[in-house]
Amino acid sequence: MNKWLLLTTIFLISIFGLLYFDAGGNQPLASQSINNSQRTIQHRSFSDHLIKRFWKISDIELEASSVVLIDAETGHVIYQDNSELPLPTASMAKMMTELVVLEAIETGQLNWNTHVPISDYAYYISHHPGYASVDLEQDRTYTVEELFHAMAIHSANGATIALAEAVSGSEALFVQQMNRRAEDLGLNASKFVNSTGLDNEHLDQFFSVGTIDDTNHMSAEDLAKLARHLIHHHPVLLEITSQPEYLANDKEYINTNLMLSDFIPYEGVDGLKTGFTDLAGYGFTGTVEQNGVRLISVVMGTESIMQRFIETEKLYDYAFNHISNLMMSAGNE
Image (tube, rainbow, N blue to C red; front, top):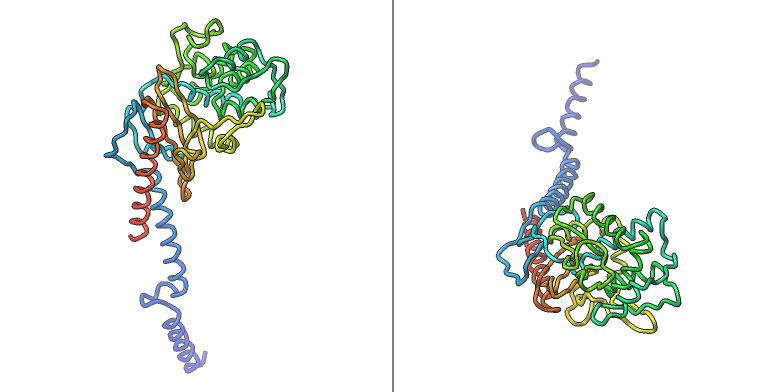
């Protein structure tokens, strides 16, 4: 190659390099800008991920026997107090009934339009005063959808029993399925003796598992795990539990979750299950989503119908304020 042509080529390459490459001569300026942007996005995403996996709250006083709060995405425990302690669940045990019924629908054993007759047992409990009842009649059948909505929205005990009998033929056999699923899911502090969460003594002559003094037990930790499984595998449940009322027999039945009502509303709450018996006290397994963060809470053993929601509200406020501060700190790094 001509000597002058070679020198000119080298000169042009050098000038191009000065214009196109950064001072270190290692990377194009445009490429550097793109990679810096990518690193910022990746860093923020990584920070968000770390927050969701490792953030915790403390220094919060709640009036309850047992409490747990978890991140629904990761299962990470954000706050807990006596969460491993098995306690009477009351109607929060119905979440396991919901799971078994939803799985029966998933496998085709039932469908939402399957018609279910009402046994003497389901009829008796549905007409018992004080048992969160939706009155059922024996001269007609009810669809699985009707009974499931009554159970999930108004915590109807008669409807719950009718569904258990539709799945397994009897509540005793259904309870076996409940306990097997608890074992499968690693819910080691859970034991079921009926489908509803009532104490066996409430069932009078119809109780079939355990002794007359037995009741269902779960830990707050197990309830949170079960709620997380339901949300992830059966999201249709939240479409049902987010409804503020249920209409049946030309009567409106309010959702027992008062965080969906005007009494103590909370933005983003869409489930999940309340419970009360004299033995269990008042409990609530709740779930809420704000700004892409979903939390699952369990509060057990409070002293009043409103206190379970007030304590839950405290948890949510504290947690969302805390994670907002963490996200802001991560964004400023």
